[in-house]
Image (tube, rainbow, N blue to C red; front, side):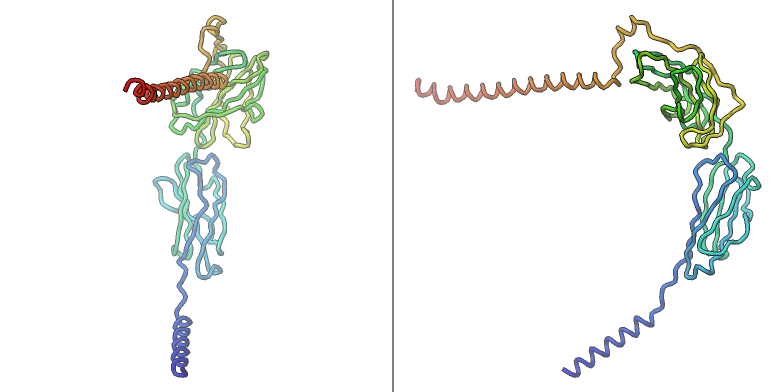
Amino acid sequence: MGKTKFLALLLISLLGRWFWAKPVSAISPQVSISKLGEYINTNTFRLSYSALTDNPSDISAQFYFRKEGGNFSVLGPVIGGASGEIEVTGAQVNEQLKYYFRVEINSGAAGDETSSKYDISGPSPVQNYWKERVNPGFYRLHWKNSGDTDFSRVFIYRSDTPSFTADGAHKIGETGGAPDAEVSWDNLGLDTSKEYYYALRAVDKADNSAGLVADVQTEVQTSGGVLGATTQTNTGQAVNKLPKEQVLSKTSEASSPTPSSEPQNLVGAASEANKDGKLGLSLAIAGVILLVASGYYFLFVKRNIFP
């Protein structure tokens, strides 16, 4: 027993020495840079980094930048520490091109990049805008999206007075779609006693906006702030005023089918479908009962009477 205990203690001692003597694995240097969106419409912003090494106090970081087609140049001084940031200004971003930004730590031990296209040109306005009053309290807007490749979406503004500002207080929706796509947009549930006026603003992927397109009788003022989103308004373009809305005649309103987007019609159709389904199920059950009764009659009753 003593010999066995001695061997066990010796084995534990040797294993302990092996584990304690085993060197700790080194941490591979890592760094990440803050990411930019696909497009930017400002040339003044800050970039940051965060890094990880065996010794965070010895980390040194250097930023670089380049324009599309060019070479990297140093951006700012060397920064020490596991994290930090640098300011980008018009000295670096001054043409409407794609820009690349890179950070390296400890003389290139690790690096990371981000990129974005600087764009301050507004898209072209929507085309062929017109509206129709389908029913009281129901307007349908029609237009063709901007044809620009970086087109993103259309902001829709509405007021019950012909003079209003295209701002967050009057913005009622937005819709996307492909460039040059034909769009129809419904606005339901409105006060039937009021007249409504609309304006549209095309916006690109950098949040630059086109000139407004509005109803002919409206006077719409531009505004750069929309529900917290900053847009670069193309102020050199006057508001485009188009022909007065097209209003359906009473005859065409009466003869036109009610749009499928109205929920009460969908409910009615579903109700009729449910009635038809229940009637069919009742008839099927009655048929099965009749078939079983007939078989019983012929197999048992009739055989007993006419063996």
